[in-house]
Image (cartoon, rainbow, N blue to C red; front, side, top):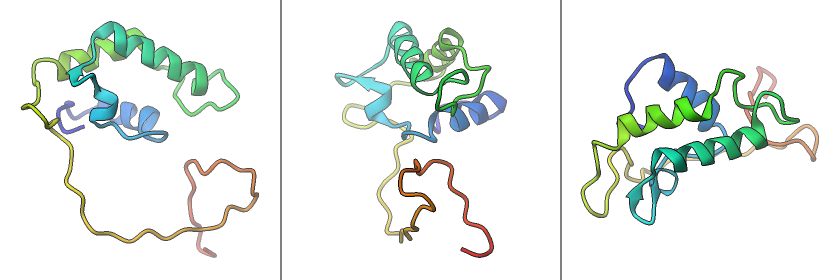
Length: 119
């Protein structure tokens, strides 16, 4: 994520994409190499099919375009290849605490949950 330029495109990318999964080397690399623009576009189209603005689970904003996003990712990631065995921007594991909460309805999907004043 640190390789992507700051600004509105990155902000929207974070909102659209990282709400469902991390953006790490498991996503950015294929067989240890950076994804091609075509591979990015295919993956983004697949995600739009699952959670695009016109699906039953509209998590991704209406303005998300697979080809434009793929081009932006390749432009910002391809020339900044990682050293062997490490993808820049990955973070080391730090100790932290996780607090779990029950969902109001058991069948709900735990996406974009917000805890209100009553807990």
